[in-house]
Amino acid sequence: MSNFDRYTRVNKFEKRRKNTKAISVLLLLGGLLIVVLVGFWIFGGNDEEEASNDENNNEETESSIIEEDNEEEDSDSSEDNNATEDGADEEQTENTYESNTETNEENTHEEDIETEEADPVSDDENVIDAYTGNWQPVGTEQEGPHTTQFVVDSQDWMEMEKAIRLATGLVEENMITWFIGNGGEQKAIGTVSNSANTEYYRVYLTWVDHEGWKPTLVEVLQENDKD
Figure 1 (cartoon, rainbow, N blue to C red):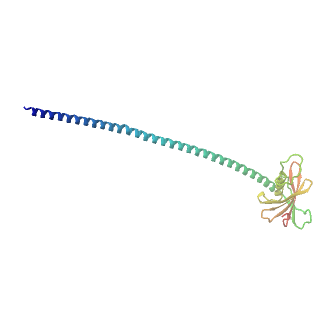
Figure 2: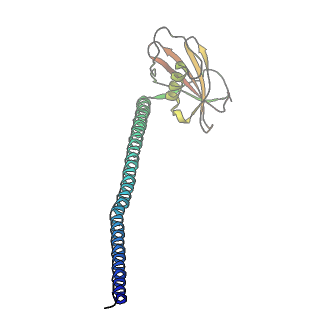
Figure 3: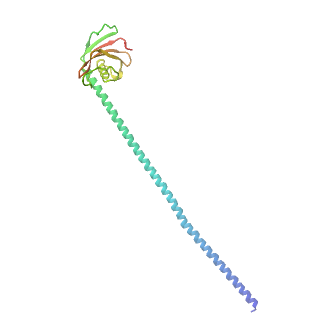
C-alpha cells in the first residue's frame, strides 16, 4: 500500500469522526432544547393556570363579599322598612282609637239627648228657631279655679267647640267656628255653621266647675251674622 492511500484513508476516517461528533453535539443540543421547552411548557403552564385560578378565586371572593354586603343592606333596609311600617301602624292605630273614642263619646251623648222648642234670648229677626236640651257638661281637663280663655286652640276653646258640636249635632270635620266670645260671667256664646255654609247656629254655653262647658240654648239663624 502506498503512502498516498494510507493518507487518504486516514483523512476519510478523521472526517467521518468529526462529522459523527458534530451530529452527536447537534443531537445533544436538540435534546436539551426539547427538555427545556417541555419543562417550560409544564411548569410555565402550571404557573399560568395557578395565576388564572387565583384570579378566578379573587373574583369569586369579591363577588361573595359584594353579595354579602348587598344581603346585609337588603336586610337592614327591610328591618328599617318594617320598623317604619310598624311605627306608622301603631301611630295610625292610636289615632284611630282616639278618634273612635271621641266619636263614641259624642254619639253616646247624642243618643241620650232630648230637645224641645224654646224662646230666643232676644227679638233678633235673624233667629228662625230655638231649642234647649238635656245636655250635660262635656267634661274638662282643666283643674283649679277657672278663668275663661277666648283664645283659638286653647283648652277652653277646644272644650267649648266640643260643647257646641254636642248641642248642634255637627261633627268636627263638618263645622266651621265663626265666633266664640264672652256671654257673661263663666258664660260664652258661639256662632258656627256647617262646612257647606247652609246651616247657622248661635249656641249659649255655661261653665260648670270640675265638669266643663254645658250648652244651655241653641238658636238657629237665617244667615251668618259673623261672616
